[in-house]
Length: 196
Image (cartoon, rainbow, N blue to C red; front, side, top):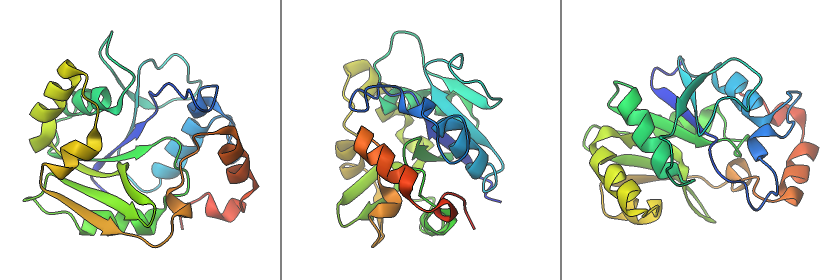
């Protein structure tokens, strides 16, 4: 089991999906958020859901709530996570990436170092800022970004000590942003859903 805290980001608008994607049925569970929480709890000692409200979920979990009145942006989740948890680093994953498995997570953790600010997954299609490790050293920057409504994670990462870990498989890191991507994910083999 990984001892680092895992934060599942599920507080977005889901505007491209047309409905809250964290609440879509998936992998034999009533919601994608529940599926992700169940599978990640088999890998991490502590899993938290970052969200604006816990009321929308009908299963038991540990929630970290965004402050009232802040934008729908991961920046708010990072600030709340570091303010809530007494830890120097967190592993983050977007709720809509259900195929990121144990092997990829382990590779990211092994690439981490105390001298870094972040470790981020990268595939041929680009980097994946919501799949990786962030250190508390970035908290002040996140707080500034939240105040200024600057939510460009890519820029933050480029200006700090970030290590990118290359993966050849884009499919494992695919986001379910649009209805067709969700339906394609549903059609994939069930064996891919769960970690080994």
